[in-house]
Structure formats: structure tokens, C-alpha cells
Length: 205
Image (cartoon, rainbow, N blue to C red; front, side, top):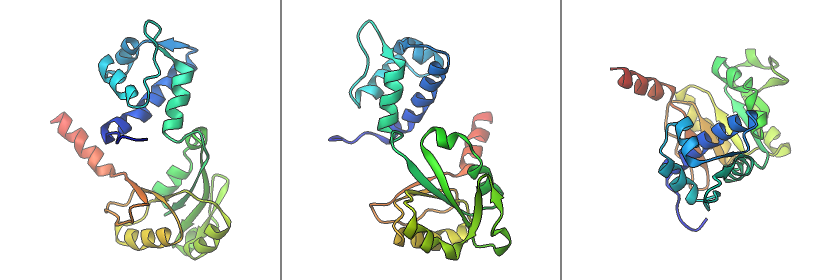
């Protein structure tokens, strides 16, 4: 894409995708920006501005074809292709993420679980068995993996991240409460659960 799309717009795209999926489940074929704005609590002009960044997709007097817009936003978000994930850190949080069934509906496939704790080796989490971290390099030689999910203590996160990058991982979904130094061609999405909780606390104050 020739021009830079703002991070604020990109952050809103998954929300559009989610609402459009709900509309499809309700067998709604088309929707105006006004009706979509009421559902999403976003102004109609904001919706039109956001979608115009990617070509618009609407027709004057018709609104949006729900299936088409859902498919196009899916392409924008890269959901039209398969993403293979591994999870590093198979404790309680890791197991909860590995068991999240909605991933596969969005073309994210969990293909491997790893942990440095020898007591977890062989533990079944859904259809997968936890492997030891020392099996990771060999696994990545024989499996195509796009994204690593990190649910490990922050003191280990940087060294594990460095290992993953050296093994060719280009995307990291980071639940460890630490910023990861990575090369420019590696993308990191940080999930700070406590930040979200503090924002909720602020809103309630």
C-alpha cells in the first residue's frame, strides 16, 4: 500500500470484522454506515473515513454489502491465508490461549506448544502435546511457523525472543510484560493485561 495507514485505523479494523461477522450470522446482506455506526457506537463519518483508506467499498444509496466488506477486511487483515502459530510457555495462560477455538475460524492454526519445565513435557492441551524448549530448533526446521505466542515470565522473554528471531520467526504475540528488542523485519504485538485492567480502573474512577 502506497501511503501509510495510521495505527488507530488498523486497530479499528478487527472490530469492523467482528461486527460484520455478527451481521452475517444474522443473515443481514447489506448495511448503511449509519446503521453500522449505531451498532458499533462509532460515527458514520469515522466508518467511511476508515474504509476509504482501503478503497471505500460502499455504494451511494446502497450502503455496504456485508459479505463483500467482511471478505475485503479479512484480506486487509491477512485472514485470507493460513497462519501457523507456536506457543512458548504452556502454563495456565498459555493453555487457555491454546484452547481458544476461535483461532481456527480466522485461519490461525496452533501447531506446537513448548515449555522449559520438564514436568509439562508430554502434557496434552487440546490435540497437541507440550514439547520441551530444546526441541524447538528441530521443530522449526520441519514446520512452517509465522507467529510465536510468548506467555513466559518477563525475565526469560528477551532471550527466548532472540532465539525465535534467530530461528526465522517474523511475528511475536507477546504476553510477557516486557518490551522486546527485535529487528525491523520482525513484528511484535504486545498484550499487557494489567494495562487493560488499569484503563478499566481509570474509567471507573
